Image (cartoon, rainbow, N blue to C red; front, side):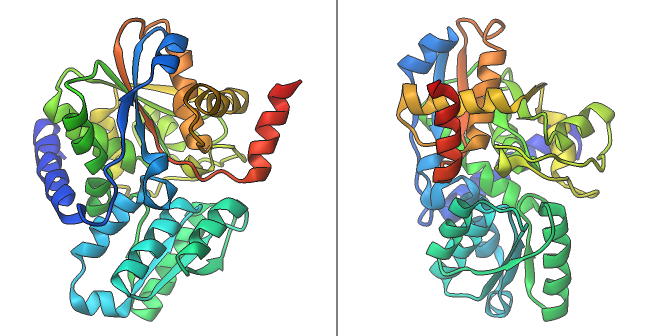
Length: 328
């Protein structure tokens, strides 16, 4: 993917996706937060994807891919792998379009995310310890049953779908100095930043991940996709490996200007800040972005900063653990 050409073609794909999925997703708020702005010493705007259908941004990419399929492919159905949010999005899409779907999840998937998938009558199968193992199984089953494999990030149609949040942001705000997005497979940051950099070329994009699962960020530093082990993290939505041929890797190389790794304690604090200051129920991946904002607050003083609150699917048990940590 060539530098300027890459962003230019992504821009068109994202605009087409926005038109395609318009009737199936919610245009979520992108609003200035006085309380978070005061905390960070910057003009902070929050893109509230925790208010999206299924509780996360993932419906955008899943729906765009599903609407790309022909009648024959839709009839055969789809297979997906997920830590939860992508699975719920695919299940929601399958329910909307009335097509068959199978969802493979790692064995340690949180109860909240499993329940969210069950809400959309998902056919859930457990396999492996992380998304890479679940993905490998899902791909094998798709091949065996002649179904379509729907990747959580490694598909241009999915990346373009995630970027539609950026289309909304560009109409909801007249410009940003910096953008903070949490990074797993890179579909969200690739899509949003790829689109917004074509609109606001000087935008400074900060990608953040938990120290316990920094695969994409370490890969960017190494200049190649690494096969690294991930430890358990509150930011389960960004956890796991990156496929060797990930289409998101060159996009992330192009659009991410700076990376930040955050600790589990910082993620906890990030989740708590968004609950306490903004009254938004958020999951660990959104806490990761909030944590990155606080780490970078000195450099971001006085700037207008966009922060993507990517999801709100947090279990009661995890929430209790976070609240108890800070109640002492």
